[in-house]
Length: 133
Image (cartoon, rainbow, N blue to C red; front, side, top):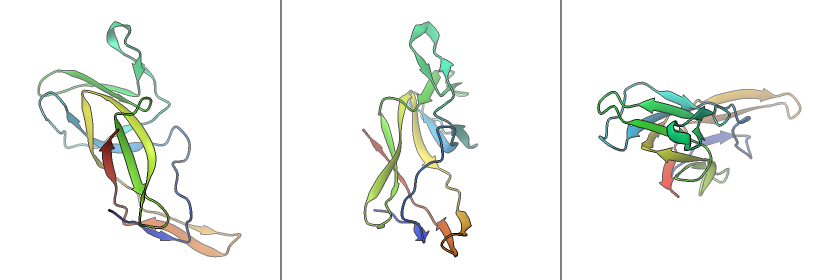
């Protein structure tokens, strides 16, 4: 399984469709994984060649020159974080992948102060997993 330290948090969800998912993406053709983190949002819409619809991001692999894409529509890979009970995983987003495979996620520890409850809230030390749908 996995876990995250949730301080006074009962529900975790991305804030809006413009939430940036920072990912490491592997080329399904040659296996190349670029060093830099890339972000995907569900609101970005890039047309695919040949009228094959659209995707959130289209990129050409620097190693094999294959054009790959990833979006947030149909489910090919499901990204999950631990649920509030820390025992089970909760699905946060589903990615449609054409030639790309998400292999890592860069979590951002989040802290704030709940004025109404008068207590600190936060999410720390997040673990995650990707599963094929």
